[in-house]
Figure 1 (tube, rainbow, N blue to C red):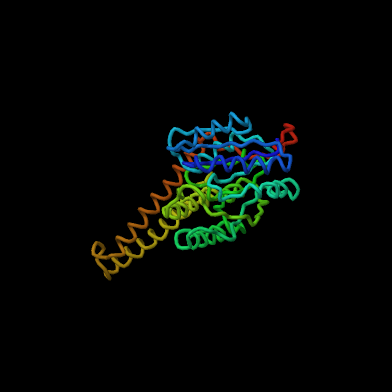
Figure 2 (figure 1 turned 45 degrees about the vertical axis):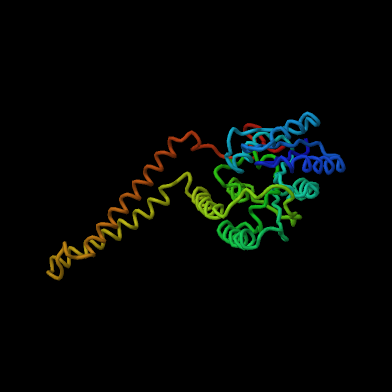
Length: 318
């Protein structure tokens, strides 16, 4: 199969028939063998009934329905698990992403050899204050921290090689950082394409300003896990050891000054500061130690993403 299109959705019953008609036209014009996986994230409208109707008309349309709303990351992760196309395309269901972009995204993956191609909505039709300005700041921060030169990390329109989606896990609200997660997993050939952004025709946006706060917390989590996920002692142990050492030196200095009669031990603020640093250092060191114990007993501690293996004659390329 050439293409799997994954469409996460929540309360988009009005948009889905128009989106399906658009996708079918583009796929047939370019003679693609394709499937469309629509993941209903606990919609309260008639979205699921629409998906069932699309499946009856065209078996290429397949659906997954959550019992409740879990979020876009969960919907994408389930879609990734069920995709079977050589190239996997993700797009939103609100008609703001254009299926006309799919053939070029497919070409960039297959002919130019990209692992992942992210869309860039260079010209947006969203509110400047609510979305555009915060989005630019968010993308600038992510670009600096991750080293990935993309302008629009959160664009829903992306293309992936098959083995990329089978090698990553998306949860929480980390769909914004899929390029970062892919790079962490060893897929560093990441490209970008300017894509058309259209005005929403039906419904209302499902995202609020709290996504920016949660987004930065998720970014911190990803950056920490990518560097210290399997060796937490390297982070907590180092900081803890430094704090303990500083506290111990300060304690020795305070004791010497007390023996020389310069200060009263219990009345000196430096005595309590030294005790605080020693206590903090000990706690951080123990946190690193406990983290190491958890990692060593984890069932995934020795799971690594292997692209090719000549010993076992194994390859995950499709």
